[in-house]
Image (cartoon, rainbow, N blue to C red):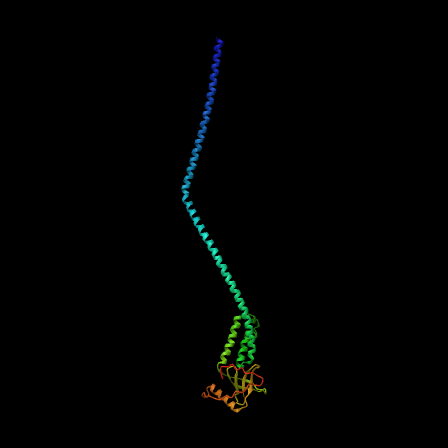
Length: 280
């Protein structure tokens, strides 16, 4: 009986100890769960705080971001328009460039034609100058001399442009036209066939006919424009000499103007008279 009681007491103590162990284990588990819950609560609270902060920041930044987005869209639109304009402008530039190139080619062609034409005209000038009356011939030679650079200015010869050459050509033929449209008089020295020099008064009717008489009234001649150049032919008829003197007197307003019968000599044999004159 005592043994059973002892065993019963031991069993009871074991059970009590076992219960304590289980109780302590359960408490430990409950404590761990509580800590996990606290950790989860803290994380949730932290997440809520971050979400709140992000929400507040979005509320603060939203107007600025929307404004920036609006500005970026406007800038994008402007850049698109500029690109379209640049493309259109580029096409216009290419078109203008093509037109300029075509104009340049046309001008170069015209310039080449003008160069050839001027060369031909100056050849004609050099052929014509020998047939001009002496005063006009002298004037032409002086102008051509300056143009060709023979006045100690040969370096300028290559600087003459087609414009300069055309201007000179027009000036030469303008002088010729004016000379041919009037009666003109000059005084100069003439070398006679015998080599003697005399001062003479000259009269020219246009570019085809002329006369001169020496100041001492001892010698007179008539001039012709021929294919071989300007030629003088002596006047032996005293009546013709008198007529030349009367012409000079009327031209110099030393005598009242009147009609006179002027004897015109035939051109020297083997020559040809240029009859293109404004005067009969």
